[in-house]
Image (cartoon, one colour):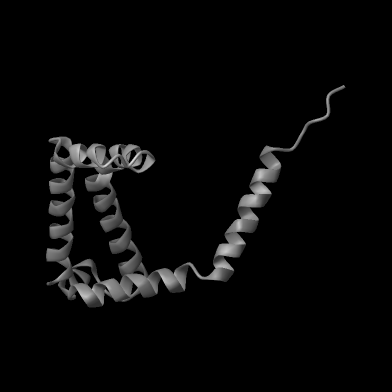
Length: 121
């Protein structure tokens, strides 16, 4: 399956899951199985599946096309396994441990500024 077709399939799958859940079928199963907190979490998460897939698609396309010489049209034509590998490698290259540590330092510095106490007279 080409990546473009896989993206469409994932969007459709997300819509089906939302419809099944909204229609009560999956909700009834979750409630009947007494999943407790997991069922509660699913109630909040399932309706967002289609949106999450759409946003993930946008992120994956941006990451892949900005990390390679591929155009969006070329990326769409890759088979799903190759496209998935490109996405995985783009994440690995662009979000390595050194970068994560750098961002953690930036976040800590910003947090320190926002939490700094001011002297009052």
